[in-house]
Length: 150
Image 1 (cartoon, one colour):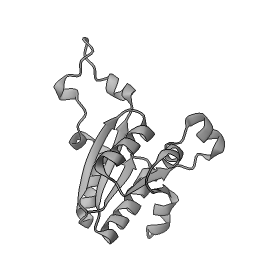
Image 2 (image 1 turned 60 degrees about the vertical axis):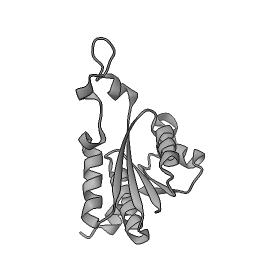
Image 3 (image 1 turned 180 degrees about the vertical axis):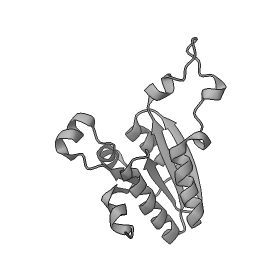
């Protein structure tokens, strides 16, 4: 079965990527894998006084609101979906999980920050495009606005 990896973070651009990824998955009869990467800093705030992560604070995909929303959308349109909650640097984790699950396509959103902001803040979509060993589809958040009836 074909697999499509959709990287999500709760932004409008990620919602656009979800919409396009679900449409492609439905057309191709593919399974979709939603990947949400949380930063190591967010994860570190969950450590206790001994530097350990208490079991009740370990992030779980089913507890992640961004992943839950995407999986619910997939269920509504009849697309089989798997959530993946990752910790680390987004582009590296997206590429790693794409390889791990054998994704045929990676779908990422682009916020369209422009050259200056992207140079300062970095661009996950650009890094994924630059280092991927499989096709990558970059979706602008305007894609959803153009497809959504008023």
